[in-house]
Length: 81
Image (cartoon, rainbow, N blue to C red; front, side, top):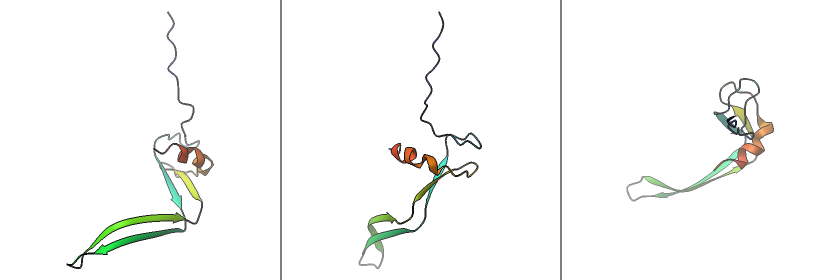
């Protein structure tokens, strides 16, 4: 009996330059970060809350060869769990 081939994931992002399909990094220019702190009686601070607002477009890169993969950023952002 002939074995079926294992199904492959067709939605994996793979760097066309080096073949990397595991390590990526995202860069966003012009981020505004707002962080709220509470000061303790001893003068130290506790971080209460932090939020970010992107003013620039996000870009995606291969973490192996630094190829610009921004064309796949939409797919990347949909698959972050």
